[in-house]
Length: 232
Image (cartoon, rainbow, N blue to C red):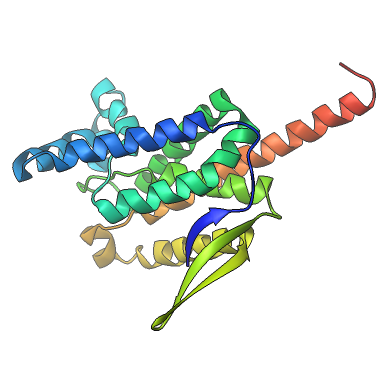
């Protein structure tokens, strides 16, 4: 399933979401301008390398990679898929958290995603990069905050393509099940050492987004009860 848009309008222009998308695209275009040797060096220097970070956990240089890695991608499909999901789901989540709140939400989701990948994926020498962990947090928040929303989705069926309106919670739930299944499969030693997709980063970011969105709903509910009771 490939989501292309939702039917959930926003109250405000999603400036933070747009800036995040532009920043990710700008970094990726810079990556594509590098030669092979320079590209490999850039990826190694600015991605999170678990073994390197664990060896120097308080190094400003290594801690910086937790943030820089969120804006780096390994290929066109990687950046394209991530930015599509961020655009579809991020604007509404930004609407609910507010612009400053959404920045914090996004970064915390990315940080927790990195921590989860290192904790469960091991201290590998393989660079970890991408916005997927932070965007996983966005997906979880969308499911919590907009459970009734629907998404226009492309569904390839053999040689045919079907376009359908599907509940967003189903699309996000299907995505989560895929990440969980692949994460469990990646625990096999041979698979873990081979590297590849950071499944636990996706799961960690999703968990972080879930917790923060639930906390927001509790806060909004409490504020509404006080408002209805006449408190200001």
